[in-house]
Image 1 (cartoon, helix red, strand yellow):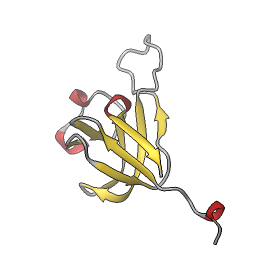
Image 2: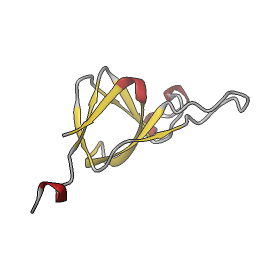
Image 3: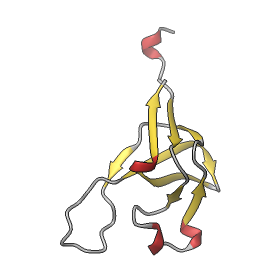
Image 4: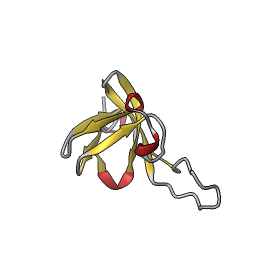
Length: 95
């Protein structure tokens, strides 16, 4: 198998304590079952690159801002494999 046939691994690292969410909205609007705390400097393997998504707006007059990533983890975290996470709290890279 040549190196061009190999898929590059995608690693996501939390840069500070943050929250995984089942919807891309401010965590204060989610009940405890819809969010999970994640410590800073935690690494996760992703199945693919994160997808940028706009936050679910509480005020429709506000412009969309692609402030969240939709991520799919290689291994589930707290029983879920897919989450939303605030972009400002993570970094990702292909290795």
